[in-house]
Image (cartoon, rainbow, N blue to C red; front, top):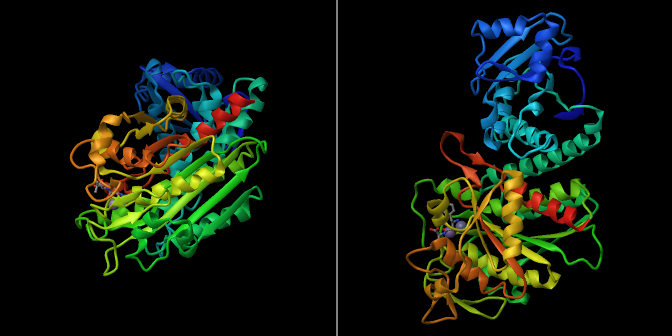
Length: 499
Ligand code: BES
Ligand code: MN
Ligand code: ZN
């Protein structure tokens, strides 16, 4: 899709369709008023006759409106002007795309950037229009033999800004929106690919491809024998039962000052989680192909950051394995030794995410990180606690937690903090090893984070549990690309505060 910004009156746009907001009840927006005036009161007349009320989601498509240069005008009802939230703004962009798809228009001028969204400026609206439009147009049909593509696909969106003074910043917002959106797209594609295609080897190839596309990204891949030498007994124990070899992927984007300690992302890359010997029940087990969405979000965020050419140092680490039952798979009760030297009693082979993350988190020390953020579809308990809206956030450093909470508010890709109190640590006691890999009844998301905290003592660390937000189930089953928006915003904020 092509995106750009422009400043100009709606009736003067020589284009397939102009999209104009209308508010409840029957209130014309500034751009609607201009079209009304140009067409000698045609619009207010239609409003009076009840053709459009301005209720949220209402639409009215008109052709050849008098004294306009466009083929069509699409009015979109936005509900009460004062009630428009981030969610509503996304919904309105979706409505716009859905309606336009059934017209012949391919080039669009959107005046939805006029809509007031609480505490958000026009640049935010441009950026998020792009994310919303791309979201509405996303289809995953790589694996279908018949791909029904639209005959006249949408090609171009031009966002209106108020005056030439807003053009430069608007163009920057377009760049940011397109970069984040491309990152989300990539993360969705990787997430949606099934376990028989998206294996650890496939993820390593995807990360290597990223390095080919961006000269500033360097990717390296450790094989099982390399990991053995490093003493990653915990990570390797998870993939023992699988025919797919484990990989440890590192992507380095070092475009910042040499002396600046990097931001390190660590993404859980379990390409299929059967549970292992502690086998999962059959219902919805297919969804465990999404157990690599943390890894996918790291790849997506690295892509966005490189596309924006931000002068920052960011490292992405992806421990990736497949968790399968087998004659040589880990058994409940097995004790393994992690890279840190701590021994772990595997009481449940389905608590495998923490077993691969702990070694990756020890490995992260070698980058002398400023902060480490891990992203993982780690616990079903997180879905029980928070549902599908925010990711769970736990951290050993409150300024880092606050930065992430704030990046979540800005981007709309939100997280919510849970306590990482020492009180929970005792749930991880083991009679046979230094630590058990499950914490028993209660606070499953917190005890999982407590487990990880034993391996992150040397740096500032935050953990994002994305079990509830990484994909949607039901008829809309599919990866969301979250939290690429959050991670990219965090890096953007860091860069802006240091500038
Ligand atoms: N990948 C799962 C967590 C998960 C389950 C995410 C369902 C999203 C939906 C993880 O590896 C897992 O199996 N966790 C266990 C931990 C338990 C054994 C302590 C869980 O949540 O049941
Ligand atoms: Mn599991
Ligand atoms: Zn898992």
